[in-house]
Image 1 (cartoon, rainbow, N blue to C red):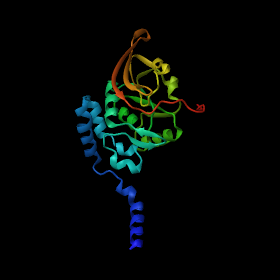
Image 2: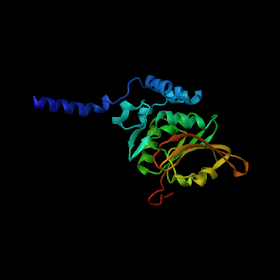
Image 3: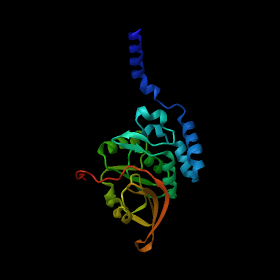
Image 4: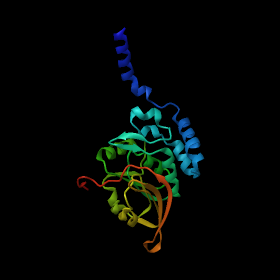
Length: 236
């Protein structure tokens, strides 16, 4: 009898990638958006429609795929997470994108946020401090056919000066205070959506006014992984 159980476990282990596939993901994504995001106040129909069409399960490890459309962050390795769907929807809607913007994202992570943004703007330039995640997310985005997203392994605190200025900036990790170079690389009239703080974090929307004046609005308390500097210099 024991050998039968052993054979059964071997079979399950071999077949696990198949079991972990997400069937009817379009329906699950629709339910996620309608029941978890829209009802909590995100009303931008363009953002909601794109999130219904974006396969979140493609951006998480195989063992996490059954949980892809739950309203929670999920581990993606290297002590990082893919953000909670509600937070993705909220932060994206706060950018108020019209479709022709050049957007900078700090913290590529899994690539999911960049995928959502790519269908709402002209170009996405996204920076990831962990080389392994930068390589993986770039491969995932290419495999899924996203051709207006540019992934860079680098220090998010420095932004992407060669591509500045940007119409909008979104940050998916929390610095203790606003990185000045990100504000500098924002166009006048542009919006920067960023969680800020250490023990206590707040989601801010910052608009750059004429003369470099900063208009800051606090939205909600949040909890993000810290935005860190690289331990070693990252080569260009």
